[in-house]
Amino acid sequence: MEHRAMNVLLVYAHPESRSLNGSLKDFAIQRLERAGHTVRVSDLYAMNWKATLDADDNTARQPGARFDPSMDSRQAFENGTQSTDIAREQDKLRWADGVILQFPLWWFSMPAILKGWIERVYAYGFAYGVGEHSDTHWGDRYGEGMLAGKRAMLVVTAGGWASHYEPRGINGPIDDILFPIQHGILFYPGFDVLPSHVIYRTSRIDEAGFSKACDALGQRLDDLWTADPVPFRRQNAGDYLIPELTLKPGLAPGRSGFDIHVERD
Image 1 (cartoon, rainbow, N blue to C red):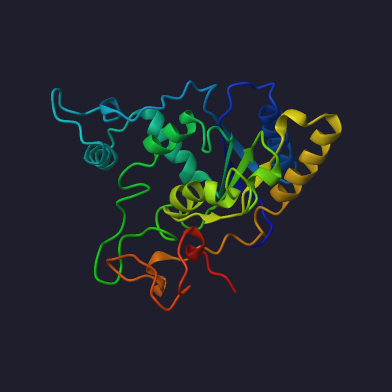
Image 2: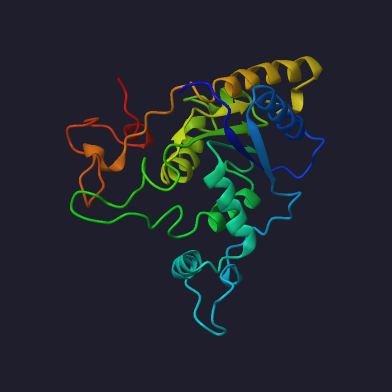
């Protein structure tokens, strides 16, 4: 991808601006802006983001009507009656060429406030429920969709050692832990997903360690437009049986698990 000025949305989920995460966020903004990119930040705690998806997200909902999360979301998206905070974040996603989700790894996943951002902003008709279903094409998803052509990357902090998240580590491989986010939340609506950037042993990072962490993150940000994305298999490109959506028998024979959905040389 050619080097040019890009629009970057940084979705940030940490409640303390003076934390390591807060300092890394500030560094990332400065690094990207110095490179000529335009950055917008959704600081979810500072925004007092409403995390729960509920009936109030459709402003035109009929009183007393049974709440159906998907159908209410679809109706609100199609009719322009979404809650204004949802519509505003969708506009940011449309605007962005690249999206960074930055968060601490809490209980093997993202903080609840960021999960709530996904649940509410990823409306039916926007991030899912897109495209026709047929015998050869099962919706525009997993490599296709509204967010196709954009890049996304996770910036994650973890308290544990890197070895705790290695293939034989007690916590499980970090790529497995983050797979539902990378493959399910980012690749599903079409993003080209870059390998995650993870900072370990956060409580042990001193001034020298912070400088090293910034150098490493800065390199990833510099490469945001040129790095190769994770080669996830596209759903409708011929690797999967439709409508079963299982990997064809001749591919990755005898194997199962997350890794079979990544093309390996």
